Each structure stands twice: as C-alpha cells, then as structure tokens.
Image (cartoon, rainbow, N blue to C red; front, side, top):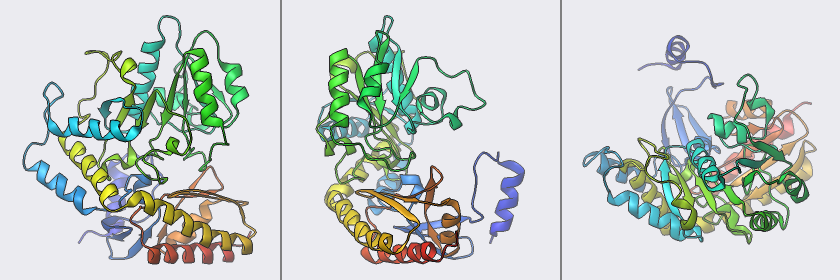
Length: 396
C-alpha cells in the first residue's frame, strides 16, 4: 500500500504548490467520516469545503453516477438530454422566481456567466457592478475582481474594470455607488468565506428596492449557502427578496463538479447562441448527481434537519461560549456555523486535526463549520466535544 509520505513526495515533485495542504492523505469517506491511507478515522465538519452537503459518498448520488457512466458519459450541448432539462425544471421550481438555467462546472464559472449576462443586459454604456467588502465569488478574473478582498487581487492586476465595493449590510453605501453606468448589484445573502456574516434585517429587501429603482440586476451568489444548507432551498428565502439572477455550485451535485446560473426568463434570452458556453456544463453525470441530491434532500427531510443541526450547535456552542473567553461571537444559520475568536484560528484547526476533527478557519479568526445535513446527533456531540477540549485548553 502506498503511504502518506510517499504520496506527499509525489505531490512535491509533480503537483504545483498553490494549495496549503495538511499532511494527511484521505482515501475513503462515508457520511461525515473519512479515513486516511493509514486507516485513521476523522470526523469531518467541513466536508468538501461545503460541497459534500449530503456527506461523503451519499448512496443515491453514487447510484445515479454509477448508472449514468454505463449509459453515456458525455456529449456536447448541441444535443438535448433529459437529465439537464429535468434539473433545470427542478431548480426553477424551487427557486421561487421561475428562472431559466445555464449550467457550468463551478461557482466561479457561474459568477462569470452572471457578470457577462449583467453587462449584456446593461448595454449600451452600463457595465459597472457593485459587490461587497469581504465577499468571495471565485478565482477566475471576473469573479476574483468581484471579490471584495484586496488580498486576492495582489499580483494579478489590472483587474476587470467597473467593480466597486460597499460594506456588507450598508444600504446607504450601495446607494452612493450607483451611477448611470451601473448595471448590477452582486451579493452573497450570507457571506461564507468572509466569516459566516448574516445580513441585517431589511438589507436584502433594501437591495431589491435599489435595484428596482435604478433598473439594475440583483444577483445573489448562493454558491455556498444554497441547496438547503440554511434550512431553505436557498438562503435568500429566509428574507423577502427575490433575485434577478442566482448562482449555484458546491452542494448542487452532492460532491460532483456542477455549477448553475438561474436568470429570470425576460433577461435570460440575452444569452443567445455564441454569447456563452461551457464544454462540460450540464453534463449527464453532474445532472444525474444533482437530481439525486435534490431527491435525497426531500426524501430524507434534510431542510428540517438543517434547522435541527443549527439548534443543537447553538445549544452546545452557546454553553461553551459562557465558559470560554476566546469565543467572541457565534453566527449560525442552518448548517453554516461561524465561531469568531479573539485569537488566530489556525492553531485551533491544527489542534483539532491532531484529534481527528476536520474544521476550517477563515478570515483569520473565524472557525467555519459546514457540516453535512446527514450529520448525526452523536457525531455532532463528538465533534463539539473535541472543539470544546481544544478551545478550553488553548494557551493565548
């Protein structure tokens, strides 16, 4: 059997080092548990960076993919296929604004499609897009320009022109940035990479009003918060605001690469043949996996389970906060959990890894948890116990 040190050596020789990697090689997963090459078990509270919403290797997704690869792996979008049409219907019906779909492979591609659509709708002369400080929209040039964090812009300038940034939650700041060249407002209903930041009351509704008043597109980036993670199909459904355009990925296909952009019918037709495309977008494997994901969420009552997970985390972490001065704030919506600390979160992540709990730190001091909706109460309590032990024993 190949060992972890051998695999690490292989990566050192042949794989570009653009990721910070932990010295662990994962080889198998089931639900919220994974195992490394040496057979050690880990509890995963951050499965697939939010992609594995159903846990690792969810049975319906596995079966759908297995069946599809024996039938037809890939043909281009010049041909009709049933799975893509059914998935578009399923997403449109659950979106609440009955949009039409463009399919791609990732969240950043979905954002690129939304940027292009916004500018097509805004022509002539309207090309500017307002996004938010501490947002995260992807790594490709349009999406990274939309990302309101200068650290992601360093060394790759000049960026795409026409982007301005407002503080998340500040309607007046957005209003001040709007001019005759503005075509869209882009926002995550809940900021994920920015630290699990929830919008203040009336914020999304206020953005909707501004967009309507100035004839702008309102684009919701639901890549991290969408597909049931917050207890609703899409995070914006917790508030009374509907988008013109919505982007999806991560959990959409249960761990298989898939992205989508939904747009209101009256603007979707701006993407005519030749204006945009994705070679693998809407492929049969990804669409079958996405349909199986939707089926699992509904059949297993996972929207309600997201609320149960939130309640249990509030109970466990709320009790811990009362005893742990390191915890400054808790931000929880469904299975999106942010624990803001008074200290650097990276050592906490590393100590949890030693105890075989996988978590994430974002924005320096925020522990980010994106557990699977299939997480059991026993697993939740086990992970919280490890986190409690690490936080209470941490020396500042």
